[in-house]
Length: 115
Length: 111
Image 1 (cartoon, each protein chain N blue to C red):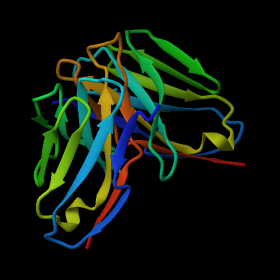
Image 2 (image 1 turned 90 degrees about the horizontal axis):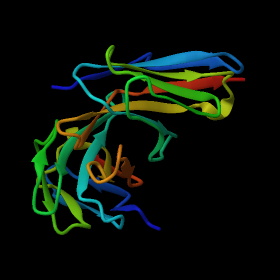
Image 3 (image 1 turned 60 degrees about the horizontal axis):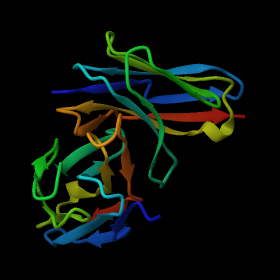
Image 4 (image 1 turned 135 degrees about the horizontal axis):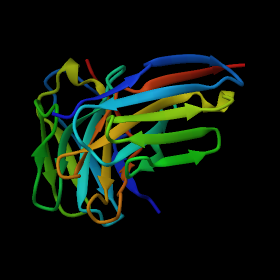
C-alpha cells in the first residue's frame, strides 16, 4: 500500500535550471495538492487539483506550474529555479467531499536546494 | 481569506507537565485537523474534528474544537520525551477542498 509517492526525494539545482517533481497516488482520490514547507511558516499551498483536468492556484503559485496528468499523477514544475524556491515540497491527496470528514494524505517530501 | 494562527510557536516543557497548544482561525469552518511531524519526516494525522464541541483523545493528547470561537486546543497531559515533535493545526477552506495550515508549534519535552 504505497499511498502517495513523490520523486525525487532530494535535488540540488543551480539558479535558472528547471526540474519537475513527480507525484502519484494509488488511493483513487480526486483531489491532489502541492505544498511547500519553510521554517516557521508551516505548509503553504502552491497549487491544487480538485479533479482530473482541473488545477487552481494556491497561496504561493508564482514560479511554478502544474500538470494533472491523470487521476493518479500530479506534477510540479519549476521552469527557472531561484534560491527562494529552496524548500521541502510535499505532495498530498485527499478524499474531501468523498468521505465524511475526509483526510489529507502526504507523501514523504522532496527536499530541493537551489544554489 | 482564511488565516490560521497557532501559539505558542515554540514550547519547551518538562516531562510530566501539562500544557495546551492553541489554534485560532479567521473564517467559518466546520473541520479542523491536527498533524504531527518528526524532524525530516512527513506529516502524520492525529485528529480530525468535525463539529462544534468535538473532543478526541489519543494517549496523552486531547484535541477539542469550538467553532463559534474559531478555536481548537491540543492539550498535552503528563508529557513524555516521545511527544517531542512539531504539531500543526489545519482548517478546511473554500468549499471543503483545501487545508490551510498554521505555522506549527515545535514541542520539546525535557527529561
